[in-house]
Image 1 (tube, rainbow, N blue to C red):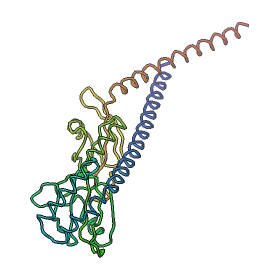
Image 2: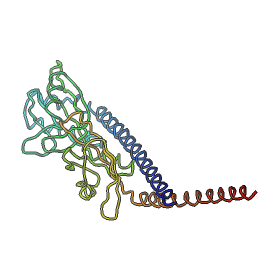
Image 3: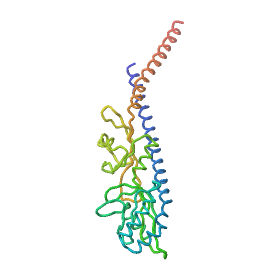
Image 4: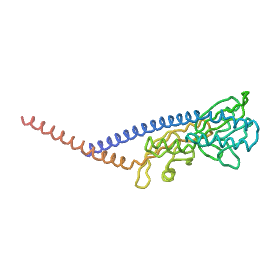
Length: 285
């Protein structure tokens, strides 16, 4: 009987682990698909706002003049119009020589919300890219690059329209119910909807890449899932991490896993007893 109970407990634990793995894979796949859609939608919204810059006569005239004051003034007016809808909160202008005559992000040395490689493709090949980026100050953004031409078709500048990536993470949290974070390959938190939760569980065996695992912190259990972040406009190797408190669910699973073997044991015992009774009756007959 002891061997039978041990076998039932082992089988129940295997079922519990298989169910947990299946749920984790489903959650990770669903979060990744949602994230891709959020990024795609955000990029599309910014592209639709691009004419505010590319067709802005005052800005084009300022860029042609090369006067820093005029460029800054015209860019600020354009940014104000972009911010009206909330789809764009940052504007950077990059010259064909890769100088940054204007950036709405305060910095001692202004930098664009796109990598040097991405800017080179935009300037040299006319590429209009969009996606996740990181600047020199480690600000993570959702960015779109669009060329600004003069009347003759000569490139005046590349305009980088951007918004803080926290907005996309907040949307992912609203859709999944889990805290959404971006963590680099060293386990350092770059940005997230709840930085405090990473302080609690970030150091517990963090592995970059596609992972999913329960993590204990005190008397709580968190589900931590991650998938690689595609940074189309930035030299950034990082992961999108979702973290959710599953303490109640985990406790319920444990209760079920403990109760089930005993129910199966009782069922087996009844069948075994019934079998003995039948066999005994046949023997007496």
